[in-house]
Image (cartoon, rainbow, N blue to C red; front, side, top):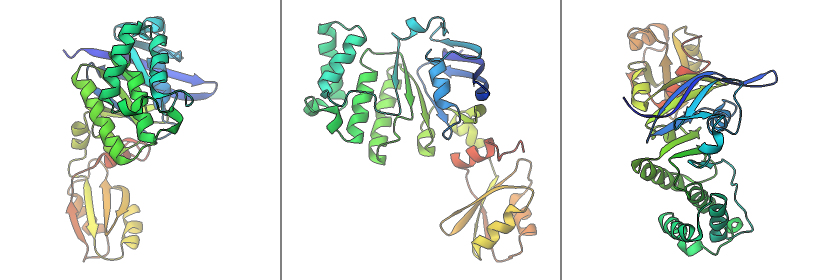
Length: 308
């Protein structure tokens, strides 16, 4: 059996009358990158904070690295790193000063801290910036510094809460290469995101909406659930065709992408192309089945999805 880094059963969190997380079950394999995909307010951050012991669940059971959380949260803190969406280091300290300060927080000896800081400065291309104030760094540089600090104490588990929301695509791509390096070395990485291209990079993925776990699996498994359910339509008055298609009971969503429409059919629709040809008035339309995307998976899994 695959070793699990995290197991949660019937996890719930209420803030007064607000149900932020509702009956979520998770099994996160050790050494993999596991993604939470969902919009703001879907419960991603709340779940992460419960898993690392910063929030006490209203109900449910949590085991992280074999520890009972939140009862053993203090022990867990020595074994995980946490990188928040907002840059949480000190703008008025240099790169090296931030790393030295956090090494003391983590209890590293001076000799161990010196060696580890030099290693991370080189790994994350920060050596030439060691004397630069954090507040004077670009978004991508600050991101690399935050990741270096989160891994200073060589944690076996890393929590990343929307870590790439403030950086450009090139820096995001480079950041993900660093995550795969960590995963290959045995670190379990749990990352939340609302970017579909990032979600595709994860080994496993959980789709969240309004505190509910709507779907989970590998990206390939999730895409496989929508086999032959996505049709591209081109030609004609696409805005009119979209309005007509949305009236059809078996059509779940329609989105225009450039010079074609992308139509997602509901589960159980047999022969989607014949169905659309029969019910759409324009006989000159070009219809083609096309592979699904994770955006299609997200739409199919959430409130506009098959359960409605």
